[in-house]
Length: 182
Image 1: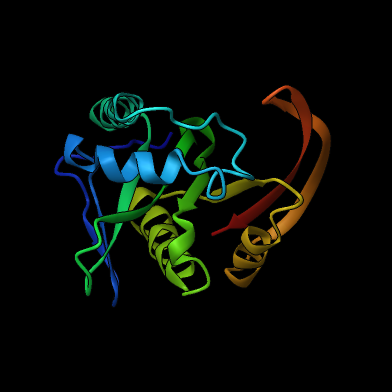
Image 2: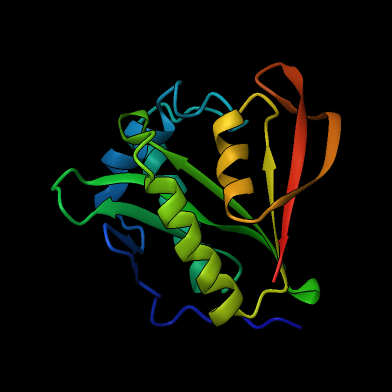
């Protein structure tokens, strides 16, 4: 079985990015991202309605890290003092199967700059090399072509298409499942 241990929290760096632990100081940025209808269009989760919602979400992420259940990183650009621009992480981990589901969201002002591809590559390397994952999956709204493109670029394979597989904002939505094996 996979054993998760995130103490100390693994801060990850790439050429342009720092992937860091989330704190209450990130609540404003989290609200700007997860409260943005454009950023959240294909995520399938409700929009944050307040800074307080963002603080609660961050606290949930922090508890998951403290209990070694899952891990999420805030994404910041090294070259700018723009605050947090996105979030990426393994939000569902199947320890017994050495498998995790990855998810991510980026503020629309940062789209089409290669930021998420860079963050994804880094987090996948950490997952396979440090956590010991055997496989990673991503669940994507079929209309989110940019996310599918990033996954395929990183070696993921589309494995499934589920019709009306989850209920969000009053409607049933389809899901594509992509997987990457170590």
